[in-house]
Every structure is written in C-alpha cells, then in structure tokens.
Amino acid sequence: MGNFFDINRAAIIPLIFVFVRFYHKEQKRTLTLEREQFKSELTQLRNQIHPHFLFNTLNNLYSLIIKKSDAAEDALIRLSGLMRYMLYEANVPKVTLSKEIEYLRNYIDLEKLRLNSTNTIHFTSSMNKDNEIAPFILMPFVENAFKHGISNDKKSSIEISIKADNEILMMDVYNTKKINANKDNGVKTGVGMINVKKRLELLYRDNYELLKEETDTYYKVILKLNLI
Image (tube, rainbow, N blue to C red; front, top):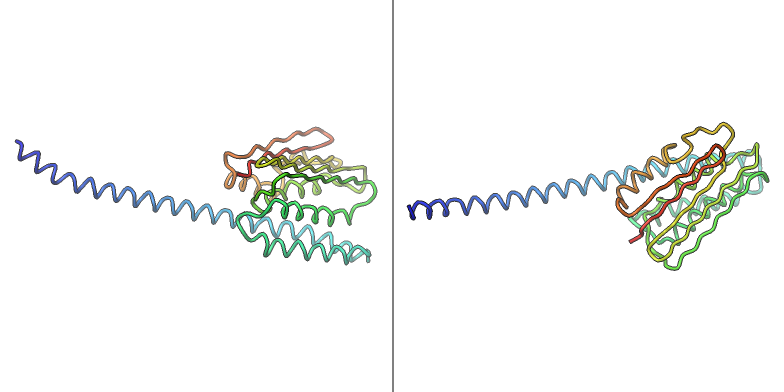
C-alpha cells in the first residue's frame, strides 16, 4: 500500500506542476489581452474626441472669415497652437495639469471671439501642485457648456472653475440653458460627453466622482478627480 501511494505521488506531482504552469500562462495571456483591449479602447476614444472638437472650432473660424472679422487672424494663431498641442504635446498617456489648463483657456478664448455682449464667460483656475492628468479628459465638459449654454438671442453665461489641491482636482462647470433646450443637455448628450464618461471609467475607475445639477434654466456638472 505504501508503494502504491508513493507511485501516485510521483505521478501527481508532475501533473500539478504542469497545471500550475498552464494556469499562470493562461493568466498572463488573459492580462495581456485585457491590456491590449484597454489600449485599443483608449485610442479609439481619443480619436473620436479630436475630430469632434476640430469640427466645431473650424466652424467658428469659418464664420469669422465670412464676416471678414479682424479677429480671424488671432483665431487662426490660437487654432494653430491648439492643433500643435493635440497632435504632438498631448500624444502621451498623461500631460501636466498646467498644459491642460492652458489648452482649455486657449479654447475658451477662441470661443469668445464669436460671441456678442449678451454672453458672459468666466474661467478661473488654481493649483498648488502641477500634477499629471489624462489629456482631453476635462475638455468635453467645457465644450458641452458652450454647445448647450450659449445663445446670442438672450443673456447667457458660463462659469468654469478648476481647483487642484495637491492630488485632488475639483472642476465645476455651470451654464445657462438655451431656449427650449433638450432636457438631455447634460452628461448624456453628445459624442464628447459619452466618450469622457467611458474614459473616466477606463482611466480613473475608482478615483472620480461625477455629479450633475439641472433645472429648467441652468445645468451644472461637478467633477472630482484623484490625480494620483
């Protein structure tokens, strides 16, 4: 009987070794596939955001050229800077927060060129540490505010605040609603907003909070982001 158990142990131990090797190999293969899928999804989402933003910006520039506005040259220079950031400086997983804020400020200044005196735009930012952040993660909130909140037919306003205290970023975006604005004016609306929610899940799954406040006259979104 003792010899029988010795023989079984001699046969089982190599089988266990083979199984463990197989298990680790499969685990490694699964993780590799998940990482590749993760990268693929991020690339796809980033590529969708760029044409969406570019289309809106070129429309604004075109309208200035048609009006033969003196602001067209300044707009073209700003657009050139934005494109340089998008194509070269932001072609990395993360950028410095200061660069991302500068990008937003340039975009806002470019949007201001097409507005009249009935519109009020306020943008403030502050930080005590220049952390890194995923590029373009904040942009859709700003773009959405301009898309759904600005009307040259009535008084409208946008207020954007970004505060970074060490590793915690707080972004508040408030905009008045257009007349007869769709009730889905907020996070649910638009390709850019759908994409940013997906990107937040992919990049900051357990490190962000996204809240919205909505009435018949205004919409507000609050993003809290852990930049660690």
